[in-house]
Length: 135
Image 1: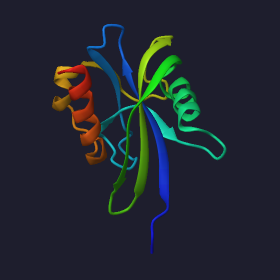
Image 2: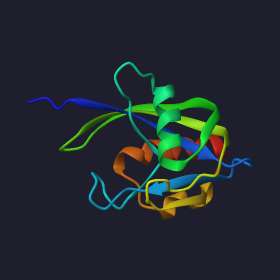
Image 3: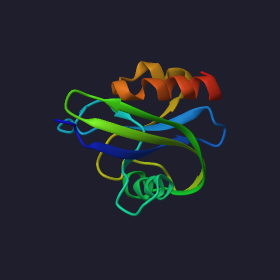
Image 4: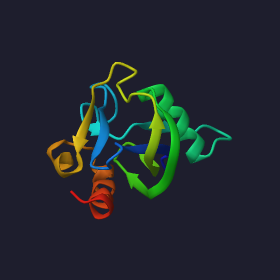
């Protein structure tokens, strides 16, 4: 049986000097629980990935995105889930990024991202961040 592919939009939230990124920790009971991630969530019916990431970042981390650009799109299949991702670089926003839903959130130097365990699906994203922003 083919797994239904879930479409996810996520934001790579950069600070003003573009040397730190805000990451959050997945709930221990969630798929890939306890690992770090880039905030975002499911793209809803009749919603673009851009609108989804703006909505999700407001809900999850309390920011209003003012500037975003596509960073990388990819598909990743886990044994139990099939996912399609659109990641966006968030280069300007208002508000203060925080774990708005009780999750841990941290500003991490790009050079230190590899010190945090991320889901396997994020490996290509981490490589793209390093390629574009250094680290």
